[in-house]
Length: 508
Image 1 (cartoon, rainbow, N blue to C red):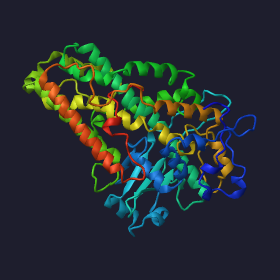
Image 2 (cartoon, rainbow, N blue to C red):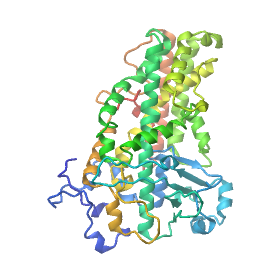
Image 3 (cartoon, rainbow, N blue to C red):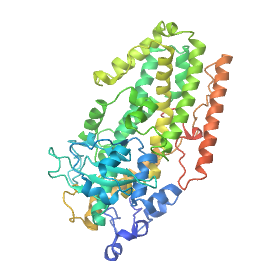
């Protein structure tokens, strides 16, 4: 999108929340300097159905909540059993949003309350690389409710975190005026975008996969069966990460140009995220269980979880078949010096900045431990990356849904916000263009993409492994059909974890 591709947003915004006097004058600060209205962002979004749907529904509470389950960052929602000390929400505030006739405490005990906590952004210095534009960050709490229709909806948002609960911690509610509530949700989504880009996407797929790749190249011989197993899943990863360091996260790179977490904020967030990175958090079933979202009956329509579990089990089954071909017992794993050196390299060199309790193993004692470890490597590089990468244009193209930065401070009082303040808070034209170009490029598959289970280089020649690979591909095909059949019944199909759309490696 060029600088002259200006945007007039009247027809794309939910007009029910805009009074006529504002609607007729609606412009963002990123209009072309000539004042001429070029192609609208609406036309750009219409190229794909999901971005258009986002554009039409972004301000609805149930759609806002849906994105915590199946949007581009589906890892932030956790079951809430006890409210955080710094969260000043009360029963009186939210009683109008609870549709079962229960109190907040009763809903907490019933397991119907969830939370998205962006505490990792607390105290982070917002991007200050542009002396002409002040940028801001917040560290919100967003309380979510599973209502009687099994919808996830926001019922309380707090943007600040004072030391004493309730002192200076304004809690925004759906019952507030439309502009207060709209901006509060925008702030949550802006924070979500920042955490997605730096933690969920960059650190926990790109950089982690690079750690595994480097250790593999350093410690495993090319003829080692585990090298052969992993080599398709590290394809181009070091190269794409090198390009990212040069173009995206470098000084004056894309993050500095477009995101509130550019500049020193980028380093601060990554360093804080490393302190909470654990081995078990990369194990898909364990990560779901830790967040309390593993039960389908408790939290239905969580397609990221459901599809991810099917893919995880398929990968684990394949890895188990291969491991049992080459390792006849636990002792053979213990005696494999290259495997032990591989996991030790990851633990000591790759994860040296993680806390001591990060649980990354420095040795493997059983075949089951080896299977889980290799499943983590493959799943992270393939399925997890696909889930959080290829939907970026879908969910982030409509900028009010996920602002890459905010140019006004988060509100601390109610009734002070109008549409003008909201417009001036959102990214300017230049940052919006950088943002759109980036999410478009990152969402594209390679021209000759190689998808999960497809191994054209045929590193293995043993018939037993060839048969195991055929079984793997058959299982992935079955998963693809299950997802396709389910999607036919959905208004918004969830495709990011369909095996036929999961590349083998982090390559974009």
